[in-house]
Structures are given as C-alpha cells and as structure tokens.
Length: 100
Image (cartoon, rainbow, N blue to C red; front, top):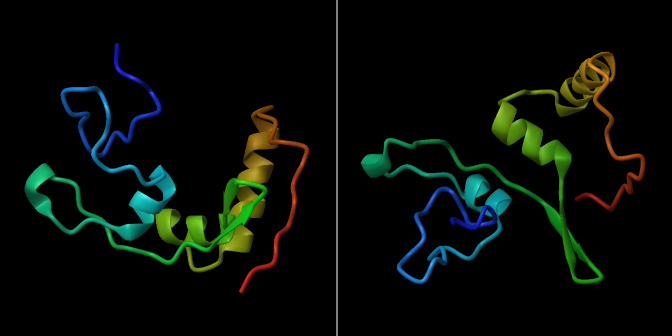
C-alpha cells in the first residue's frame, strides 16, 4: 500500500519514501519548469512561520500562487461564502500570524 503522505509529485523509491522530503506546499511554491513529467507551473513566494515545531503557510500567498488571483482577500471571502452555502465547515480556530 502506498503511503498517502508521500509527495505525489515524485514517485517513491524502492523503500517507499519520496526522494523530495520538502512539505508539499513548498514543492508547489518552488514551481516546476521541467516538462519531462508533463507538469509545468510557475514558482511563487510562499511565506511561512514556524510556531512550536509546526509550520504554518500564508493563505494569501497560496491563493495568489495557486489560483492566480490578483486579489487574494476577495477570492478568500468568496470561497468562504461558497463553502458556507455548500454546508462545508472551515476550521473554527484561525490564528493570524505576522506577515511581511
């Protein structure tokens, strides 16, 4: 059985581990311009904070990079409304970390 936590962008080697040990958000933010696997996307900056051994990523940067939206705040608000309408609950605990 394949471990679902492995990075799906690189196939596991013989011992079942992915050769790229970075977290998936960082791999995606780094971009990929090698068309050898028919996957190609532009890199984007992704801010993060490490708090008590846990890494937290900027939702704003993620939305700009992945959704290619010029206004992350408006996109996020619309997304939250759509999720609420579809009765999909988001985490009730949100913490706003410093962003530079």
